[in-house]
Image (cartoon, rainbow, N blue to C red):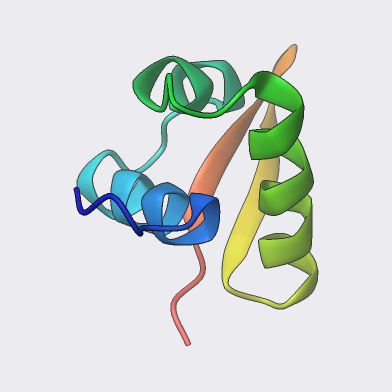
Amino acid sequence: MLEQDTVAEEILNMVKAHPGCTLDELTERLPRWNWSEVFIEVDRLSRLGQLRLTQSGAGFITTLHIL
């Protein structure tokens, strides 16, 4: 990844590469960002309709929203 990638770009790229990953897995795959930074951006992307959070059992699974 390029150094200038934003947390949003990294999240979208990671979810595209690993669809269905959990929020915790996403955070582990993005060590450059802390959990709260990832969560805030996932929430923002979800509100924009670019990412969808779906609940599965006790956790959340992130899935890319197809426009």
